[in-house]
Length: 329
Image (cartoon, rainbow, N blue to C red; front, side, top):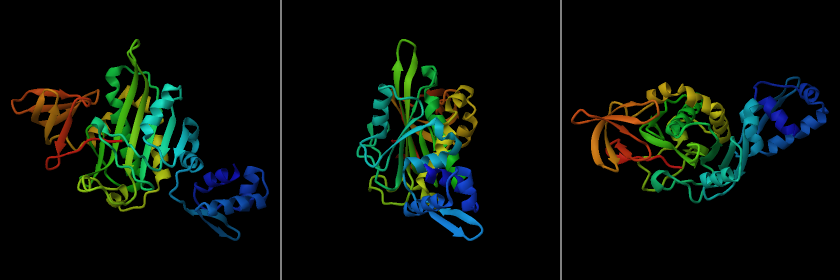
């Protein structure tokens, strides 16, 4: 549509004359003016100056497919996006669509979730208008041993997007929680359906939940959770951040195969070098987190000097004054 084309053009910055837009899209200047009026009604702040043209000065915080595609730019064709005002769980919807044959790059977004899903059966707080609740379908050709890398890679992609847009220094608590200022603002939950005959995943769902805008949290998480806006001290426009995240996820399978993201993942770790409490099927013990291996497992050294490999599917860890933190979506 013309207004989406004009919006994409204006996003490049600066003033663009109506004559240039009309010539570029082979329409009349009146058609350009009408498209700009529609964009303004939708909440876009577009300045107009005689002999200079139009300039986009601000965009609304809305979740619309056209807005998201505009933020993705040249990479919009890599994704098929579905947006819901309200849904029980974006991960559940993505799993159902994947089972029905949905392609890699299918994205499910919601303004609110009524049954957001968290790690170890927990729920994820998903109020309307303030968060990003997103699930992405992947169909990677990877062995099962490399599946934990997907969550780690996704966490690195989200952290990089946040830091690029807001100038922050995001930390990652193994394996799937993102932190700023010692508090969690994002959880990632990966789920997979497995082809047992081939020993590979049929589909992997990456669920990303972000506390984006300022808002009150329930009492049970108020002391450990933070919004990105509060932590960064800057306004967060959800569509812009979603676009940045999806751009970083575009070549995820290649990143996993090369493990090119692992160095950044380790560098962001808030656990390495710290004493933690590991809750494993074989008991609870204290250890020092010493490394993350090539398949994103956590290596810890116990009091007797032995090194243990901690798998993300089996344990939770405690740090930050003993308060348990688990990834949720």
